[in-house]
Image (cartoon, rainbow, N blue to C red):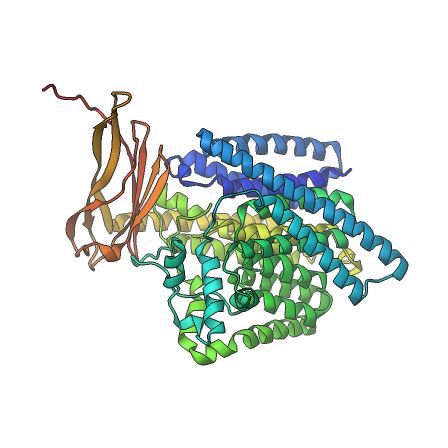
Length: 611
């Protein structure tokens, strides 16, 4: 068996662990945070080397894979050790691993069995008819039911969903009742389900519906049937994951070795992601757009559908257009762009006509930095925690990276084609917000690029023969980003718009009647804050603690405004039971234009008075 299949599986696991291990634990250690980024970069490197079959060419390649595997295992162990800190967590993790593993095994066995049947049928009929495709779909649905049952049939844990699922469900409900969701607040469904909304930098919550129309139109039938459980969205995600896995297996020529990385991806898809929109857009529509890439109009339609589901698919569109230009020329690219644009307009035009400003403003809101960035592994978190820099630094990094990747795809179509997938998936690591569903749904597309190659793929050529321009341009991009970030850091720090003068915990003490020992708990946090700016600042707070682990927000809309050149005291209601000298606090103070942070190690020196 080729070592590349194992390398792909390792890269997928590295990517997944980089998301899984990036919790509030990391905010207290620059090293821990950087190691998570290294794990993600290691994943990208292994993906690229696997795509070039580096590990199968020589003994050096196999030795390199062994070294990378050892490094990956050590990093994964170190990162995961931050999370596995109590018996409750360990038992819960063991239960989840068992359920997901059983679901993956059932999925792989089903995919293999269905693939064997399809292979035998195809060898007789030479092609799959519409009837045979319908039969395949039925069996894939049955396989999805088995996998879903393995994960949830004997689990008593209730799940209320996340804000995006709630928004999709509520928007489809509003639409079926004749109400335009783009003009309505999503607060009612969040309040009804007890779901935490996304925090905005202006000191409020995000209640607007900011996804393209197909994000809720796709699930309108589920709502129309009266299904209220958000587990139904997970069932759809499971089916989409197995569907895309079977597509990769089918296009690989039923290569059984492909089932190894597919199994790794299914494990992540089942355990890390709970939102099906990105899987529909990327793992299905973009996946099939690549399968039909030699038919520009059909692939353009699929790209338009993907773009109409979620904005995550938008970042891949320019790469598809460049690839089509290299394969089919200007005419092919033009037809693909027109087809995708037409589909996107057709899906969204009704809602744009009803409320142009609200619909367009909501859908394109992702290009603004309004959401609190403390979510998932991204470099912005490192800068906020340890090297203050404005959002502009990461916007420059993301923009230059995507432009560089587009140029490399054009100049090195044969040797660097994997950037079509890697660039959109990994751009978010440079940005200000990154969650697992941004990168993991791209994995089947990368696997398809490796396992499915047609004659035109074999005939691809690089425009430039030497790789020096690629290396030099990459170094130039890194240099520009470093210089820009350092300059912006000093400019940002010099303003010091928000400055924490003092931060103290409010500690309560009580006597345990059973052990006769004193117990300590956190009743709140006291802060003294100065506004060195020239305008009023609506200040919000994010509090993160370790041992015990917890986080909470205090929104600026509930606090007094900090005047220019003014100083104010804030008492934050943040309660933690059972604290000790190992408890650490990390507080982020942010307004619309500025953000700063400070860590505090709690030191309890209590001597009871004698009475």
